[in-house]
Length: 284
Ligand code: SF4
Ligand code: SF4
Image (cartoon, rainbow, N blue to C red; front, side, top):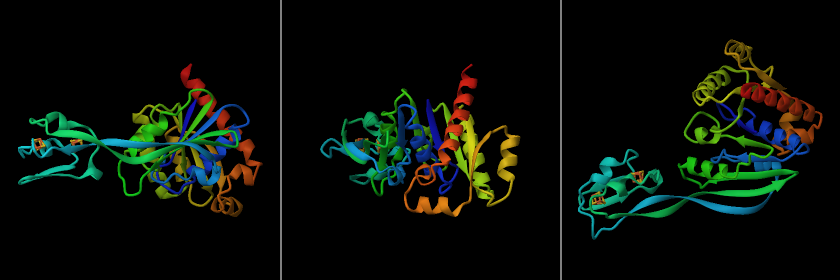
């Protein structure tokens, strides 16, 4: 079963939920945690996994052969990302903007464009505490997160449970990260901002036809609008984590909740049971 853990906005406690769920399940069978929040992967801060393998992630970017180029401008015309420009007798490639789609090379009438690989990030594989760990890391200053997410997800195992920590929000890297999930947990907080971003995330998941449920973090801090929204939209609130100083201190020290407060393991086991029931009910 593949469970993604997402949030409409950052800082809601997504990492806390993903790491504690993975560690709780580690005693019950094969568990994988894939940190696909590649712009800011921080599950490793809590898991402290031993990394045993690292692979580079690159995308193909165009290289122009000046001896063949006639400066016709077709490559610039076709690039919707404005990653290539023709200015008089010069072709400029803005590699950071290039999505590696290959259209410019395909349509160049002179065959003047070849491709060269440019590294945008790495995927690391390791393990800790019975959890198989994978994390994607986007290189500093890079914008092309989806290829790193996709490379990380190539390691997803269908055996046991795979938990995918997704980037916050509803931007480009979120779609490849949640795609293929059997269920998505949305971690939110009971504030107007939390509600606004939760509704956007729910809309995205409905378009992708992925069932979801909510974990309410810092419960008690705001109002009841998130719960009312969930009830209206028939989205189950599967767990509540109260605003609690001890939980905040553990988080600030990089200690997983279920290690610092083992009594929470039972709650995470119940959470997993509810997800499993929802997934099985849907497949019937
Ligand atoms: S399409 Fe090819 S020939 Fe035309 S400007 Fe671009 S690289 Fe040069
Ligand atoms: S490979 Fe695609 S994104 Fe990159 S410069 Fe060419 S057309 Fe633009």
